[in-house]
Length: 191
Image (cartoon, rainbow, N blue to C red; front, side, top):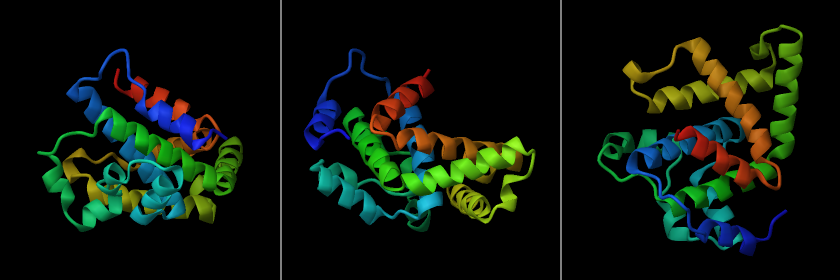
C-alpha cells in the first residue's frame, strides 16, 4: 500500500496537458458513476469521505464540498449543478484517492460480489437471483434514477450492464495501485 505522502505527491503533481472544461466534466461524470457504484454496494456516506481524507491528510475543504448521489438528490443540488464549475484536477485526484481507499477497505465485499457475478454469468444465469447482486443493483438503480433526469435515463438492460461493469471496475480500484488505474480510466473516458 502506498504511503499518504506518495499519494499526496501524486495528487499534487502537474499534468503535461491540462484537460479542457469539457474533459473535466467527463472526468467528473465518470468519478460520480464510480462513486455511485461504491455507494450502492457499501452504503458509504459523506462522512466516510471526510474520514478517509482526514486519515490520509488530504485537503478537507475540497472533500467536504463533494456530495454523494443520494445527498445531492435529497438536497436538490442537481438543479444547481448545471451552473457550477466542474471539479478541478486536484479535486478529481483527491476523489480518486478517497474512492480507491474506500474500495480497499471494502475489498472483501467487492470481491465476493464480483465472484458471484462471474459465477452467474459463466452459468448463463440471471445475476439478480443472488441477493447480494440484486440488492446492489436495486440500490444502484434507485440512486441512479434519483439523480438522472428521466429523458437522459438509460433503459433497464443498459443500466444493469453499467452497474455490473462498475462493480467489476471497483475490484480493480481496490488494489494498491487502484488510484493509478482509476486515473487512467478517467483520462481514457475523456477521449
